[in-house]
Each structure stands twice: as structure tokens, then as C-alpha cells.
Length: 154
Image (cartoon, rainbow, N blue to C red; front, side, top):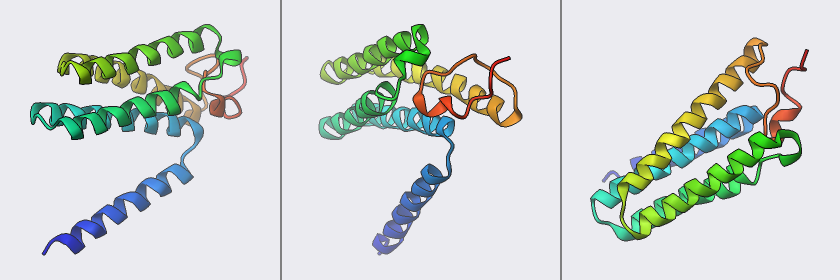
């Protein structure tokens, strides 16, 4: 009875996400990656509470994929230097915590990662907002997509 409605809502969400990605500036894309990883972690926590091992694994694997293939691989170590190295290490730590949290069924590990992701997302939102208002919140960003869009120093 609700299959057609659910399919329509699902299609709408997909189109909305695709449109958001196409229309987003590089900083917004980074924020969207954080949001996706946070959502996947929260979904994993829900499945952890419901003892659904398969869905928990899928959700936490998705979060790890976003961190590793989205956030970590987009770091520009030449521009960001120390910041990029620190973020790289932090992304590796978060992926490991999610992996161990899944294997050992430790929600506190996943919650730790959610907090870290939220903190980082907040920082990127400030950077993105400062770009749209013309102020500079940070001297240089570490994601390569951001380099050409950051206001010049000085």
C-alpha cells in the first residue's frame, strides 16, 4: 500500500542529495561528507542497540568508507602540512575506533567518533560561512577542493 509512496520519497531524497552535491561549493561538500559519516554512525548505533549485526556492519562500514575515501583521501598534505598530517592521523584513528567498536560491539567507541566528527564539521561550517561572508577563519585549508575558493591571505 505504501510502496509507491516510499519509492517516491526515496527518489526525491536521492534527487535532492544529487542536486545538493552539484550545487555545493567545495567547502559545503566537505561538510556533507561529515554529515554523511555522522548519519552512518548514528544508524550503526541504532542497529547496535537493536542487535542487528548485519545492518550495524553496513552502516559503520559506510561511515569508515566516507572517512577514508572521502575525507582522508581529499587531504592536501602539501598545502596543509601539519594540519593535514593531524587530520590524516585523526581520520585513521576514527576509522579504527569504528572498526573495533563494530567488532567488539562498543557503542562508546562509535559515540566518540560521532563527537569528533561533529566537532570537525562545526569547524568546517565556520570556514564555509567565513568564505561566503568574505572573512577568513583559517589561513589555509587542507582539502584540495578548498584551495582555489579561499580568500587570499593578507
